[in-house]
Figure 1 (cartoon, rainbow, N blue to C red):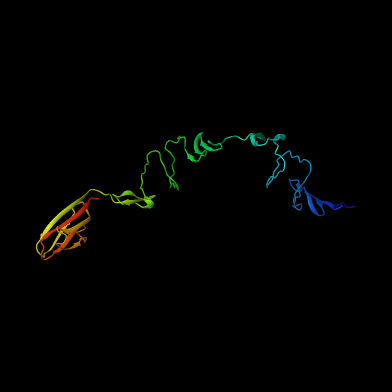
Figure 2: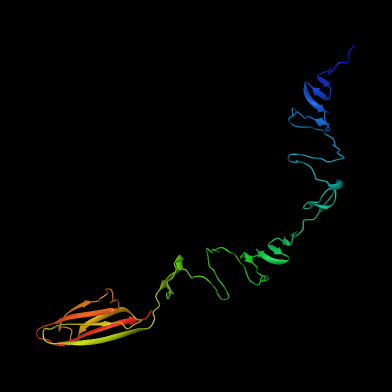
Length: 272
């Protein structure tokens, strides 16, 4: 008789390089792999209740799940130990170190180091940067540094840019003045101020006027007018602030018919 190309034994069958159960591939031997369940029909995978011994590489293209122990060379690690590679094809159970070194960087429970020098420490209520002062230039960032709380220094406060209260930029010559709780503003420098006074005489019922200008370099901040005797006449005050007269104060008055008197003027000028 002719040799059959396939044979069936209670649902088991084979043909050429395949072995089947009820038509589903169990073993394939058609290339350099001996394939188990290569069609994936057995969705739970391949199972054995005993040991599976592999003398070569044990490889998975997915996760490696285990419910028991990882046992390097058959050893059982103590609780808290970790696996560390100690040589080619060799892993050992070792104690968890108190510090880990990564190319000069290392850390302990609450401190981070570079080449043994403290960079960040978190052992109290402060997050400490360079707290041992090894980095003698200090702490640097090329961008902004924002603090939502107190910004404090126990030494000098140096700055190369502007002081900007609430983001404002002061004009040249201005100063900072505290104007309220948590509030500072740019204000003009009080500067050097002087008061200038003068007077003009008026006879019975006369209309008289007088004006004064601040000297060069000074700015008018206020002025006043008045008769020597309060009820001598009527006063009108006019500060002339047009082009060419930014620092002039002028007073005008009308005497009552039965009075003669002095009309006084005083102005305040400051050089800020």
